[in-house]
Structures are given as structure tokens and as C-alpha cells.
Length: 326
Ligand code: A2P
Image 1 (cartoon, rainbow, N blue to C red):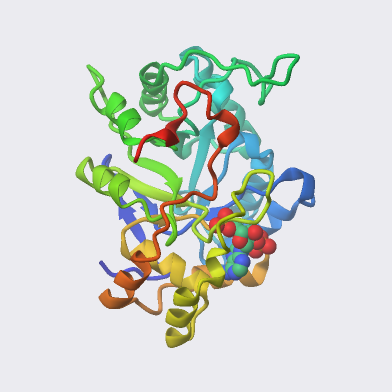
Image 2: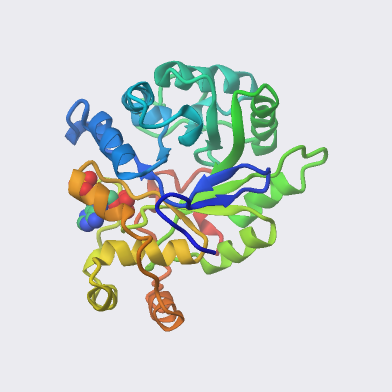
């Protein structure tokens, strides 16, 4: 497989393809300036990124859409050069809500289709526009989860031409099997977007997904930020890892570039988030070097089998995905 800055798409099981690197666009709204995402997406397109990962609940799909449309209008790209992935949130799992929710995102983006739409989490919450529904005592309000019914609604979006590909996120192998074994399955998930990086390379889930033609999209590929509100900061910072840094020095690269290249060489799509122009650029510069098989082995051995993003606040949900080994 030869990946270049110009051509680094990999095939999905429905015949479409996905750029192996994308820009993550989640940044906690409480600490993020308005238009930071808009500026980041424009810089990223100029640098060469063609893949953007977003979601309705990130609260900035309008900024992503505005940036992309401006870059289309100024002739830098065409809409079909761009790959956008959006996500169906937990409070919109009922099949009758799925199309309207997708259309809400399309309206914010001002796009007429999405390249990839995925179920963000296998956890149904009380349906409605309250993103984090809770009772008076502060407990989250859940709803019975029917992943197959929600999946069928995603299949309808694809048939309607509103999305090109469909997939899931944060599913364990049992939840993937539920979909794969569904009677009358029309389309298999193309991707499972999960946390993936050298400290949590997910070998078992990767092997399972490989055997079913499902591509892993790795979120938090740099070990995420150190926001203790939702990140397990007991795990040391990935980018400070001595092995990653010594490999990086050998290639005159950074630990971030080595972490991203490690995923790419495993055929894992990486979606590093940065809103900083220098780092956006740096994270795309992974096509001019490669890791030897010895270095791949060394980095694989860093596996701690621990997640930065544990989602422990939803551990009592019957479909909490991370109790399973993989
Ligand atoms: P910033 O947006 O200021 O660049 P992940 O993609 O694993 O979730 O990591 C995102 C975090 O890592 C963000 O805090 C981001 O901050 C930071 N980051 C992104 N790229 C780099 C890089 N090349 N070197 C160091 N930190 C980075």
C-alpha cells in the first residue's frame, strides 16, 4: 500500500473510500472560541486534508460546512474531494427520528449529502433534543436500545442517497455481531470508530473488524487532550512516551507523527484533532516516511490496554460497550 499526501484513501466494504487521515473537530465548547473550528478546517484543506470528522452534538457543524463551502467556492476543492463523517447521537436512536436528525446536520452544514454517517454510541438515551437527559437526582435517563432497528433506519438513509456510507462507533464485537447477524441485513457497517493509538491499539477488535471487512477509524489517536472531565488522566501522556520519541528522533519527526503513521501502516484511519495551524500541518506530514517492521513491533509493545476515554458516567447503561474484552 503506498500512501501519499495526494492519494491516501482506503477502500470501504461498500465500494466507497475514506482518506486515511482526517481532522477531528471536537473541542469542548466551554473552552473553544467561536469560529476556531471554521479556521481550522480552512487551514486543513489548504494543507491537504480532505476528511473531516464531526457530529451534531459537537455544536460546530455549521463552522465545518461554512469552511468547506468557502474552499469549494474559491476553487480549492470540489464537494466530491471532501469526505465528511457525521454522527447520530444517543437521543435520536428511534428509527422515526433518524432521518430528521441527519437532515438537521445537513442543514447546518449546507450539504446535500454526507459521506459517512455513524451511530455515535450503542447507548440509547431518552429520545428528544435534550442531549444529556437526567432525572431530578441527576441520573441519566436511558431508553431501551434496539441497535438493529436504528441500523435499518441508517440503511434507509443510504438508499435515499442522503449518505454514501454508514457505520458505527464505540461498538464492541458483540454489538457488531448483532448487526452483522441481523436477518435481512442490507448493508454491513463500513467502519467502527473507536479509540485507537499506541497505548490502546485494539488488536482483538481490529482482527475481528478485519475479518468482516470493517475499517477501524481511530479517535484520540494522539492520546487526546488532558481534560480530566472526560479523560482518564491516570494514563501518562502518549506524546511524551520515550519509545515514540526515540523512533521520532530517528526519522526527524515528532511523536505525534509517529503515532499517526503507526495507525496508517495498520490500515487504521486516524482523525487527530487540532485547531492550531502548525499542528494541523504537522499531523498531515506522515506520508514522507515509513516505520520499519521492527519499529512497528516496538510501538505495538507499548499497548497498555487502557482507555483515555472510558465513558464511566454511562457504565450502568445495559449496552455500555467497554465491559467486554473487545
Ligand atoms: P490543539 O488543538 O491545541 O493542537 P486527539 O486527536 O488524540 O484527541 O488529540 C487532540 C489533542 O492533542 C488536542 O489537545 C490538540 O491540541 C493536541 N494536539 C494535536 N496535534 C498535536 C501535535 N502534533 N502535537 C502535540 N499536541 C497535539
